[in-house]
Image (cartoon, rainbow, N blue to C red; front, side, top):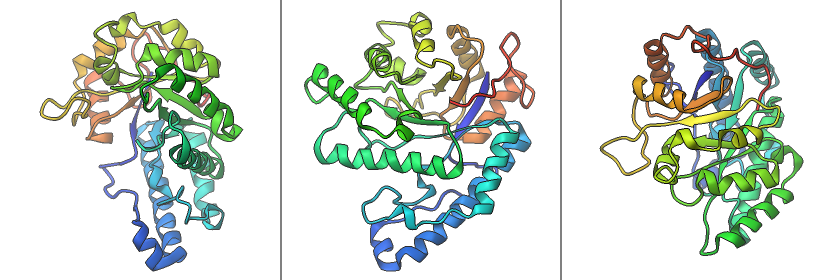
Length: 307
C-alpha cells in the first residue's frame, strides 16, 4: 500500500500559477508561456522532494497550463521545456511514481450539448499534458449529474466514453461522488465501459454508505475493473465544522487503520485528500509506523505498473 497527496506541497511552499481570461487577453501568449515555465519548474521541484521522501503517488494540478482547455488557448503553441520534461520522466521512473490528474467539477461526462463539448475539450487537455510529460497514470473523473433520468444519463455516459480519443480513454478512471453516482450505481458503468472504478470512502459515507457499509462493498468486482493495473482508492475525512463532504486538515490514524481493515486488497495506492497535503501524509505515515517507502505489515510490495 502506497500513500499519495494532491497538487500542493506545503513543505516547499508556492502553488501552481493560475490565470484569468481577462489577463490572458491583456497580456497574451508570452505571459501564459512564462506561467507554464514556472509551473513546470515547480512540478519538478515537488517530484524531487517526493522522491527524497519516498512518496510515489501524486496528483498534478490541472493548472499546469492555466486555461489549458479554453478555446482561446491553442495548446500546440505552448512549449514544455524539454529539460524539465526529461527530469519529470526521470524522477517518475526513479521513484516508480504514479502521477495523476483530476479535472474539476465542470468537466461532466454525463452532460450534453455545449457542456459536454467543453468537457470533452478539457479531458483532451489533461491527456495531452500527460502525453507531453511521457506519463500514463490516471485521469480521475466523477460521474456528474443525473438530469432527472438516470437510465438515459447512464446510456449517455457510455456513449461519451466511446467518443473519447484513445489517449483519454486508456487513462480515464471513474470515481463515486457524494450526491449523484454511488459505488453501486457507477460500478455497472465501469464494467460496461472497461474503465476502472476509484472508490472514495468519504463520498461513499455520504452516498451509499447507509445501505452498504464500506467493508461490504463488492470489492472483488471493483478490483476486476482495474484489470492488470494497480488499483487506487481515495481517502478523506469530514471536516466537522464544514458542509458535508468538506475535507479535514489531517487524517486520524485510527480511522485510517479501520479503512484499511475494510479493504480486502493487499496491493494498492491511496490518495489522501486533505487540506494539509504532504504534511498530513508525513504525519500519518509516522503514526502508522511506516518507513519512507515501505508497505504496511502484511501488505504486498508496490507494483511498477502505473494506472
